[in-house]
Amino acid sequence: MSNHFFSALEIKQITNVKLFLVEFDDKGGHELKEGSLIDRKRFIRFHHSNTMNCYYHPERASVAQCVACGKNLCSECVTTKDGQNYCKDCLRTGEVQIEIEKIVIPALACGVLAGILSVIPILSLLNCFFCLWIIIGGGLAVYLVKYLNNIRGKLTVGTAALTGGLTGLVAGIVRAVAALFLGTLLYSLMKDTAFEFPDIFTDTGFLYSPFGALVAFATLVTIFLYVIFGALGGIISNEITK
Amino acid sequence: MKSRSKFVAAIGVWCLLIVLTPLLVERAPLGSVFLYLFFSPICHQIPERSFFFFGHQLPVCARCTGIYFGALLGSFFAQKKAPPRLFLIAALIPLVLDGGTQLFFRESINVLRLGTGLLAGFAAIFYVYAGLFNSENE
Image (cartoon, rainbow over all chains, first blue to last red; front, side, top):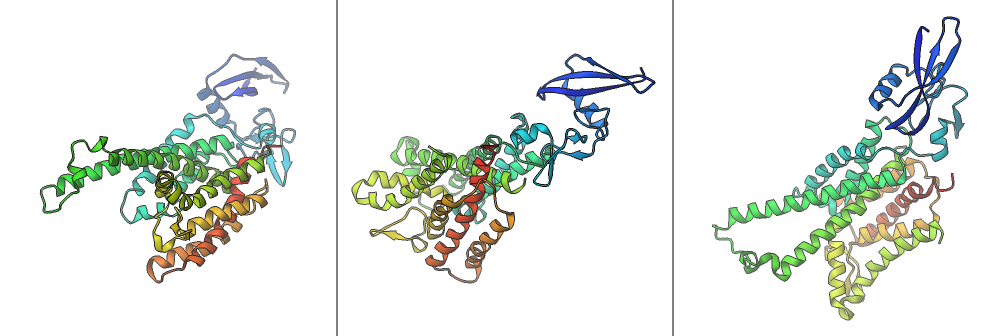
């Protein structure tokens, strides 16, 4: 028994991979033995070190790569549809589902960026045009999720919408916090000057006044719309970057 | 209810809210205030750049009105397979040119804003529809 290869023959989830040990003997024969569950990092390390072999049949050389998930495939496992190669999993769903934790960082990063751009004077005017920063933010987040996870096809609609929506949520919160901070800063800088603030700003009960309630309501509406438009950007980006 | 009906209905409700807002100004002022506020984060609502309906301003500008109603129109024709990217780019060019140049060189007119918005909204909705529904029957 000179070589040992793992093969992912049955995959329920990437975090719960059932693996089989393939043992090769010196005469070229091999024997399958069911292995124990091993951790994901070990599997990925193994998979990356054997990238030229078929994902499903590691003893075979790959002849193609799935355009959706990037798996290497042998002639038996590859299916060509509309001139593009797919593995059996991606062919069945047509889309790639990934873990929620993989969307968090891109969504946070793009959300913060879109939120900041939505506060900067002049630049923020682009949001008056169809919430453009938020749509771009959601779209960029989906693109980053695909890029960072080496996905060349499409994410599921839910994943794309969730990524974009989360980006919009973060952008909405960042914008609300930044606006509050900038408003407070502006007030503290100008309160000793000749500038006369309307009474409502100097009223200690500002947050409980009808105007304060209106501001709070407008903030919630903004966050809600940002989530919707972020999701929209995510869905469009998912479609045009497939 | 089929996916297209739901899709068209959702965009239709959105467009209905836009048309409804000026109608509510005299009949239900609080409702119209709510809707003007609702649309304010996504549109500048400058009166000179907006259409007026029954004497009152729509809650979104002429360009946004075009985009939403273009999307409503496009939702009837959208297919589960998205058109090539070039289709979207080509549809966005007039809007970008009109919106971009008016920032620096010229002042656009509402009819042009509406027209370029209609074109952009009509094209963009094809990708949203394909993104939402193209794997449904696979």
